Image 1 (tube, rainbow, N blue to C red):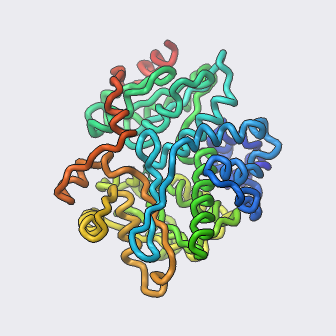
Image 2: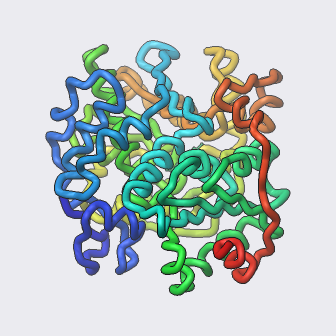
Length: 424
Ligand SMILES: *Cc1c(COP(=O)(O)O)cnc(C)c1O
């Protein structure tokens, strides 16, 4: 299998070339050359997620140096459960937050790190550089821990993330370094960008990024969405619709990839927060990226969805795609209403999905729906607890994070300071 740039100028790449490069040389994003409609059939008999994923992803790994390692990559990446919980007739929650850092980002981060570790060289390891205020940094740090052919350097804006976020960004062991940067998030991102545009530095440390444009983050997401929908269909005889809380659109594109590869997925609904870019595009056909606005579902505060190009490039069938935009008041009301009605507690992102479900028209409601719950509500306790008037208990995975010592280093927001850390 080859991977082509959405812009079609850069030459086609192998899977591992696409993984190491992250982005294509022409600025586009890598997409599989074909989306094999029979991928699901090759995996259907598997009973657990890791072996399903190994079957489902086999066509994408065919002919690559990683082909022989696919099964072990899947065993490492899919080493925690995924739960489907029925809320009412026709509605289930797909809980994707049972991994070690409590958000679905664990799937993509663990898969990507497992790939990079096999592609790297302990004598000249990759350096995964990630600026983050949200779930990605913690997931990457955790997934990088103990690996020998890569190291991870995580930057976050000091004093500008919640105490829990600070903890989960700072508690990972070798080869992870966490830098708390004396600046805001935009400056952290600028700093990372300036590191990547320094060719010498990039080459010397084999710098690579872990953001959601990397194809190795989308593939495992497509795999678990295919696994759950196949299982759902086998158990209920129904082809479910999927509701996906969306920001940078990695998860949404993964759902469309899964559907193209034969997963029984009917409609895909993208639920966004108040950031209107996708919603306006769905209504008008015009894509108008803009600066993001701050919301209480902050992992989806995106005005320029970085995976949009994959949606538009024409490889994916976007027919029937629905976009719902949910503002902060509606998020709070939905958390409150569903806590009262089902005794179920959403995180603010998952609540966008629940609100999109509540807005479905009558004709659609007669069918089965799965709402992807992307983070454990404990991670956003400061927002959710006042709304439901109750304390949220941390699950064992997140208590374990809090039990770890923190070890972040102070760093100034300039390239010389970052370079000094990288060269250590
Ligand atoms: C990253 C994230 C999202 C958005 O996912 P995309 O792939 O960027 O659309 C939603 N919810 C949570 C909790 C996240 O961390």
